[in-house]
Amino acid sequence: MVVRLRQPRVVRARRGVALVEVIVSTIVLGVALAVLIGLTGQAMSSQQAGERLSTVAMLLDEQLNLVLARGPDNYAARFDTAGVCEAPFEQYRYELSLAGGQAGEAFVVTATISWSEGGRLRSESLQTMIAPRLGDEPDPDRRPDDPVLRY
Image (cartoon, rainbow, N blue to C red; front, side):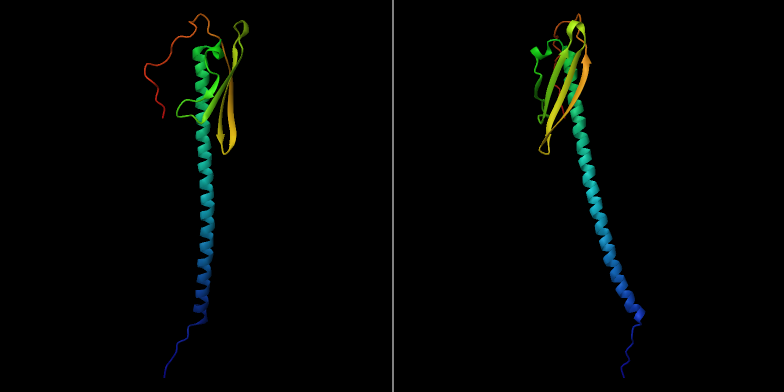
């Protein structure tokens, strides 16, 4: 005589619930990973945009400092007021605009840096006032003896 032991219905029902719990937890984990990947992509894009704007701010400052060092009077006649930035920033272009300066008043200097990003042309501008240099030699040689290395 063979005696079969029957499993109680509670055990069989419990196995079905465990399978549903595994499926639900897998779905929840997948959604959480998708959200995490999306947030990581946004963070990387924001960080790259911040780096780009930091570079643009540095290039704007450099152009305005060149005008300040060389003097704004007759700057446009002696130096380029538009062009490509020096290496390693060849993807950026600069443009300078100088106005005013009559009768010893300050010049209004506008520096613009432009670049292409995602197929669109973007630019940032900065405007300041720079007084003409009085009593100084017109354009002293201020180049460093050794070239400046940028990284």
